[in-house]
Length: 216
Ligand SMILES: [Zn+2]
Ligand SMILES: [Zn+2]
Image 1 (cartoon, rainbow, N blue to C red):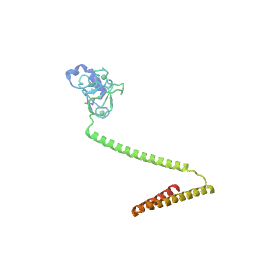
Image 2: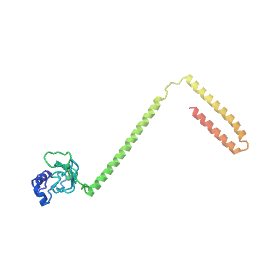
Image 3: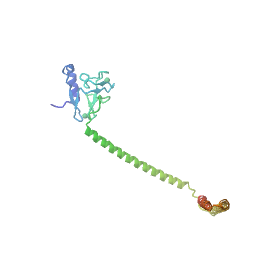
Image 4: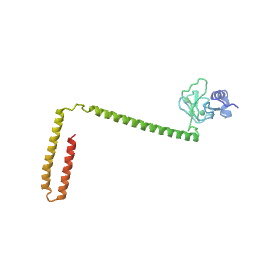
């Protein structure tokens, strides 16, 4: 027997509508995409009003909605989720769909979830690479900005002299403070050689830091 496509199933169902309740046998049909069996008594949800048909012998997806009375023009396959048309209008708006969990088999689910996992990983990798590239671009842009922000004045005798004078003054002032402090510490820590040594070390460190800081 040839496998019944959905449109033929609808026609057959409507022709024998009166008999449905008496015979109680659903009209069977097969998905036009995956070829799998779909029962005319499949519990279904109306695509127009979302009414849930638990019992679908009379109010089959091949017939009409018990609530809004609209005839579904298409139904999503419970196996592959593809659209199957139920009449020749080829209208895939508001398709009817199976009520309950989809009938995707476990192997397919597993393969699909592995695929999803791989896709996510590839996406993550790409995202990381993009971020890295963006950061790198930002860094080189910032570096260029710093470069161009630096005054590009040519050296002149005057500026060099000024710079040297500044450094001389700074050195002299730092050394003067150090000398004063050395005397203070010597008096203050006269009885404690360890503390005196520590204070002098600290002072020397400060001198170096200040010279480095102000000598730029
Ligand atoms: Zn299918
Ligand atoms: Zn409805």
